[in-house]
Amino acid sequence: MLLFYSPFHRFVHKVLVAIHETGLGDDVELVPTFPFRNADGEWVEGQYDISMLNPLGKVPTLTADDGTVLYQSQVIVEYLDSISKANKLYPAGGPERFDALRRLGLGDSIFDFAVQMSMEGWRDEGARRLDLYTWLWPKITRSFDFLEEECDGWSDFDIGDVGLLQGISYLDGMATGNDSLPENPCHDWQGRWPKLAAWFQLSLQRPSVQVHYQKPFEGDASAQFHRSKVEQALALAVRSGA
Image (cartoon, rainbow, N blue to C red):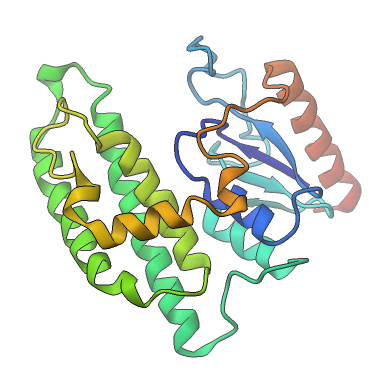
């Protein structure tokens, strides 16, 4: 399988955690894909195009062994879980499954909100929409208040935990100690929500997280390599009729 993804490991990647939790680490080849700038800050827009595989042109995108192309992390993670060789991240059914999916939805939303604020920070300071921050911050702090009360009862590691790790780790990297973010209530979020912080720090120690989190990508990240893998994925899809 080929995974086209953003190789910036400043936050926990849900799909990468799922690959290792499900025992599929040797079955998936990682293909770095940069939408704007590469790891060296060089402008590479258009050089890592995957729109032939995914009409959205977004990562993550997975090409399965049968040529099927899947996109969006929620879809990819559920597919990986369906062919798992080890842990199953999705409970089979009942209240446990829907509890995991609820936490997954919460984590994905925290991630989306944090990304929105991060991208708003790309604007010149005078052009930033301050009302975006005042609209999003309360959603995040209410979520953290809720999680602070709930996390005491967590034991098993499932897809809900994976989603929360991705969302919280992205916000942690963006907000902690950041004095430039308008009205930042998460400047010291680990001090404000200590039980959630303890869960977060413990979960970061899982081998499926440690294999990539805060570690540089060490493979081939060139545009030439990327194009060769796009061609490989397209050829596989043609051969299989996918």
